[in-house]
Image (cartoon, rainbow, N blue to C red; front, side, top):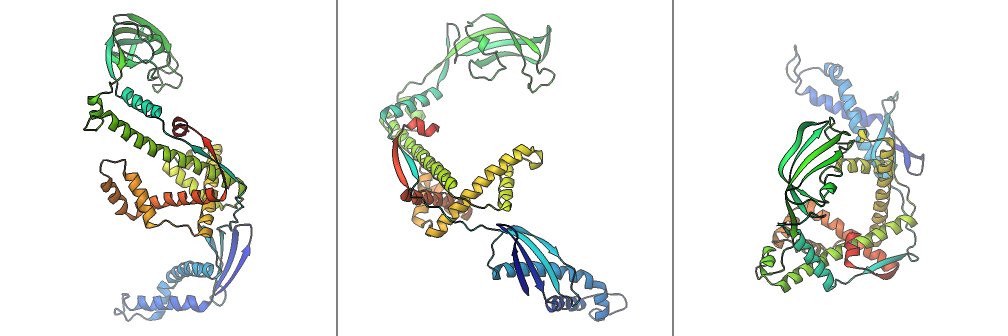
Length: 426
């Protein structure tokens, strides 16, 4: 087999492969003989059909099968010999068989780029420094209490964040329409669940009041026959309710799964949960900075095949058909994919050059940390370690953490004070 490789662009290669006639002929003859041993043709006993007849009937099909398989096998043999790393599937252009029966084909493909990492010593990463204060724990407890609020009737005018229980009938040009009426319907003011203006015009109502709301359906309303039309709602207010924040008492604490009912134990558990959330947010913030800095200083030629693969994967994850996208949307997806692929190539080079790997101890520690927030941690740990794919997902996360640690050791790190709210909301 003779192979020659031409560099047609930074990443594209054009490989010419010549396979001698004997390699094709011997395989074709072998398969024809195999067919002859079991062939059944009228006028001949089984296994006694002359090779001339077998060749006449089957040579063309067998030849095409052999050519296809030889192209596949010799392609991988050739790239191995030439030490090439193709990206995606090659474009194969078979040439007509030579007079001597030899095979010639041309394979065009992209290769993985040679990534030369830029020096990192001059980079600066800002590391947020946060301590969870007692006031942060208080605020989290208040948030949980509000989430568990109960509605209680009040004898006053409704304000924003209250809930009103109403009967209403809608009409267009004086005529009621299907689906435009309801009884004893709770409406939370300020929640934005009704059409624009509906909730706003109920601020200030009292129980027993009747009020007419003059509104318009939005142009994009889901019922096309109503979209954009003016509408009147005749509303009767049954009651006004306000949220009653749950009391911070033993009963409330027990409702959160803490059998002792101890507020101190609740604070400890919330502090632990907040610390896990904070650690995750801090790590994510550092990773974002590391990723952006590495992307800025490293120039990498990115194979189009990898970008196309990432675009397709992104579309599949979002359940989006590529055919349904505009050219602008496709371009935006391709740009985002190019950045992800670039970062992936940079990360791979860092791993390769510095021999980074995930130890069994580090993997288990990460799984145990993830499992610690569940009621039955051991069940979660077993769930990960009993499946190679799930373990691999965790290894990928830990490996990225190792990369971030490596970069942080190589760059200048300045500490920047921050707060819990700033970190978890960023």
